[in-house]
Length: 86
Image 1 (spheres, one colour):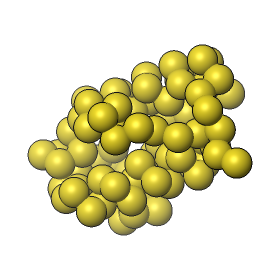
Image 2 (cartoon, helix red, strand yellow; image 1 turned 90 degrees about the vertical axis):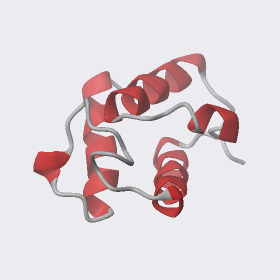
Image 3 (cartoon, helix red, strand yellow; image 1 turned 180 degrees about the horizontal axis):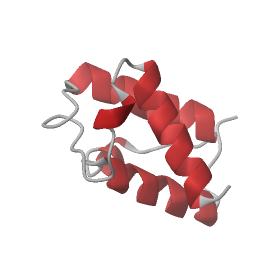
Image 4 (tube, one colour; image 1 turned 30 degrees about the horizontal axis):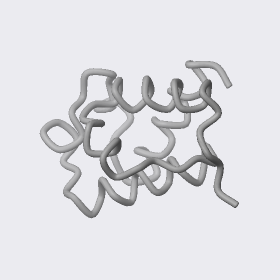
């Protein structure tokens, strides 16, 4: 999966959550710019885990603040062959 594919999936997840696509930029902060609360953030992380078939540890998820952070994290995790769900 390329970084462009990952970006498309991240945008898709956020769009499915009701975020306007025009608001979803790489610099957008999940809470400040996109209005995600802690429950929304958890839902987003869970959806990333499902779509990308990987596990994101809570300590790692807490470091993901922007759309760019999410794309970079997912790209690195997929390249490392992160532990897949069974």
